[in-house]
Length: 529
Image (tube, rainbow, N blue to C red; front, side):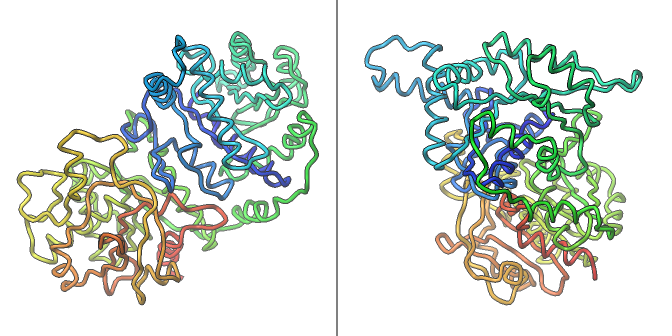
């Protein structure tokens, strides 16, 4: 089911195999008809992750990058929409040479072709394919059919791993295997028998349950791998190794490990529980409320980037979610920001909750609270500064009211304006990696230690260069500029311990063993040594 941990399980298997000396690639398959994740509301599907080449994709691709410490791109992401789009385009171009193009086999064959191309492109010994959704759904049947066809055509090169949840109902207190038995039978109905079962649960799976799963699901008891809840996901590869998962996979493929090296990863994982000093970080956003629950996946990369930076600074993170809409309704709520060591205002779109975010920016600016504004968080910090420091009381973004904005300190780029007029929204923003020149003597330069960097973007609106001179005169520093188009990428404030806004999304490039420089400096300022 969604959220049970298929993505981190895939990434963890990749980390294990990489640690045994093999080249690993990964491919996420999402069953929705959207061509990519870019047009979906974050509350529908969680965070939209962006790669260097500008692909708007599922957050699991971010997990692959973080665990494997490498960049992925458009070839490593697949949706039903992409597959159908490609097949229909080929049919229109007569590439099927007059054949009747059918859902089966042509859709699965397109999937298989893309899987093989990923392996070739990345020169991989292993390609890990994560099929999204739940066993028994209609949506992913064609991808399961592709998997079945691959196993039939190259049986010695394909292995199936099922991630299944074993509930422990609190009123009973016993771990139940029936849902997993049902899942395996549903998978069998598609022509697939799992080789390995990752038994996800709140607690480790004991020997009697492993035995029961083995008997009823037709797998060896050694192929039932316990996958209990963990307090941080980077433990998972080491937990799998304790269960012998990596060696079991190699054994099934008739392969031997080249070497064994997860030392650096293990050192980090062992050090994390020993960090006692806490840093209190507030994330002021609007996307994490869904009914009575908090959907933290909306800001997954931000959360992980905070953790990475905290661990390098030898502190543990205490993250609190603050609703920007609540700040808008109750201005007194903003004063609680003074209780935190640092505040982050992440990205977003639209007008909902903007007053609360700008209030948070103002409180941090005037009370010397470390502040990191990401994309929209930077734009709102600029608007607040223009209003309250520069005297532009009508300062706003043309995103909010295109026809009535008197002082558009944030404005849409001309090329984006044409796309908006044509109602072209999907995949048309400023996406992917762009260069940035960092000004020496700034917080940004102290963080990066170099003048030329590259960061990932996902936005349509920019700081309006017409207002740069005024903003700079009043104390705002434009510490990062895109050299190709003279666009402001990083802003800072003078005489503040840490007040930085970025037009890009630094969280997308943070890794557990190499935290992002700006997050590292933000936490360094927040911990107040």
